[in-house]
Image (cartoon, rainbow, N blue to C red; front, side, top):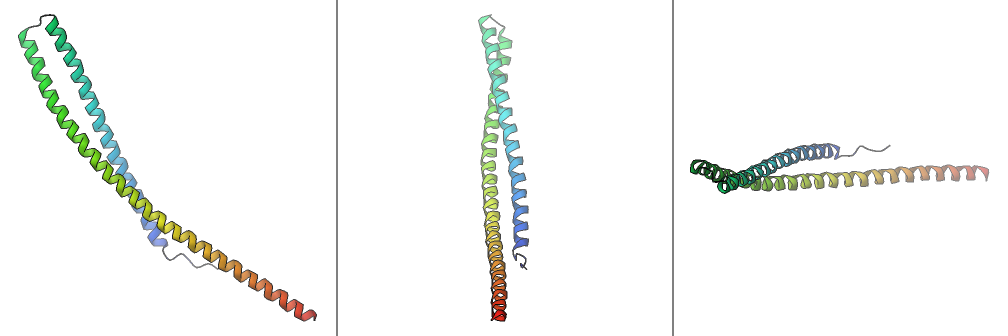
Amino acid sequence: MARPFKLEAVLTHRQHQEESARKVFADAAREWSRARQALADMEKVRAQYRRAMRLKQDSNGSAMELILYTRYLARLDREIGEQKHTVQTLTTDKEKKRQALMTALKDRKVIEKLKERYLADEDKKERDMEQKLINDVAISRYQRKQ
């Protein structure tokens, strides 16, 4: 009869750590994705307003309208710069969380390998004991026939 694996509690703990790290990484990836999408949207809006400003310039729009466009585009440029910084920060954060996930994954796999080895050793011991018992029975039958 096989003995229970002594590190089963450690394996369970490592599995929980991995699952937690996986969730944290998924949250970071979602946040990064949203920030990237917001940046892309801002850049799209900026391109639209630049085109609109050029059209106003070409059609001799009023100076006040052009000043408003210029101010809005300047503010949008600042916001885009801030958003780029946010995306960069989130990229770094996401990478750290990915590394933490990879570490948790490796830790769990180490314990699983130990468990596999342990189970294989226990299985071999059991087969060896069965073979020894079969051999003993065969020897005793042979001796009785003699």
